[in-house]
Length: 289
Image (cartoon, rainbow, N blue to C red):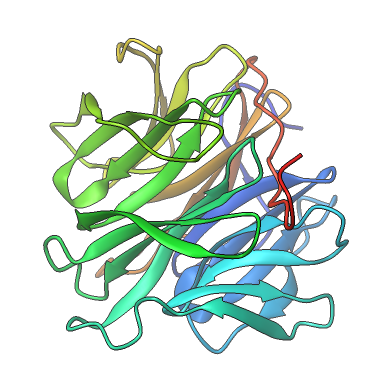
């Protein structure tokens, strides 16, 4: 039973577990460097099940509206669709041929049905990363550059505010976004972490921002004014991704990069937090609705 202390869900220990989402009454997540899209069965003591396996790193996915069992994905050096039979259809590979070896990282859909995805250098080279927006017609547009390890983004309920972490810099920035055009405005600094790195993020129904804090074994919750109001401790060093399913917070973690991983590094955790999340947005191809 999930209570107010973190419990381990499923048997797996992931190398780089991230991109966790609550979708259609279930949980999906990725193990980035192995290219696997995974689903969490109802039996929390069972192993995760594989939905799809790619031959390239898989950063995160969002469901595609009106196309059951189809996902839009930040993968390899670009953006693709993962079809129900596991095949991929590539929309664009904007990081092909970059001066630095690149891969896609975290991604999400906004409430207007656009998909946003960050890229980073394999070696987290300073300023090599970008943020891309995938519009309803499938066009892939670079909207920000000069990032190092972009994580999130996360959007408020109406899509007019975007939070984006640059994990290597220990900073979360907040951008105004025009919901009609998807153009981000000038950001302000929402939070700066003295210890650890902000990683995956989500916004709850009260407008507060949750972030996993890599390297510290903690999750932070911030009011919309940037004040930290809650901290949850986990028995894993590298919390990486998170989502809210109702009032249950799910958190992924990673074994990657640890010289001596502990028994729960790489596990997925769940904890009841009493605050519901926002519905997971889908990518909406075609015209905006």
